Image (cartoon, rainbow, N blue to C red; front, side):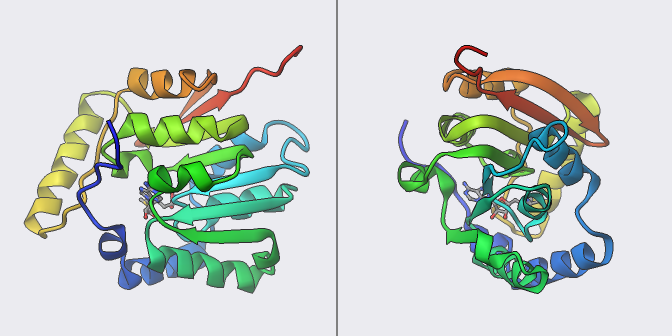
Length: 220
Ligand SMILES: C[S@@+](CC[C@H](N)C(=O)[O-])C[C@H]1O[C@@H](n2cnc3c(N)ncnc32)[C@H](O)[C@@H]1O
């Protein structure tokens, strides 16, 4: 299978109005609990992020890479398919004085991945559920992971699937092309495993769960 197989345009679905609204909320409350849990899992214990590089795929307003940079990571790349989100993340990074350590790139990560550099810590915070081709997205992210890959996805189970279905009914009503996907854990695990990563932990955070994958260290 080739291509991103994504039928919608993220610039339109995550437009300036949504990016501005999220940025206002984010400035008021800081990164949400799912993002904080994902950042802690990626950073690990103690100074686990110290000096490491970060790849934040679909970073939105930038909560995940901000937390990892504040935890000591050396630099970050934020690649987002939504230009308005990217602009909001850049403004926020400038406000916080973090922008010199972040590279911002606009595009679909799946098609750009061959030109993206590998990073120590890679994050997909509530991104996999926006993308139809889970194998391509998780596989490409896993191949670029040197140490740890963290993924926040909707939980399994009937309630979560019902909620995802309800979101998609609403998306149809408002004529949005964006659909939410509740991809199977087994599929996500297989895509990451195919690139040599092992599932280390699953943490439930309300409607979400945070998956942590790790690349086994040679001789470790
Ligand atoms: C629901 S938002 C989550 C934003 C942020 N990570 C958070 O948790 O607040 C989904 C984000 O993923 C981005 N996205 C989805 N698929 C993508 C892809 N294939 N490549 C790059 N960005 C993608 C969207 O543009 C959007 O910024």
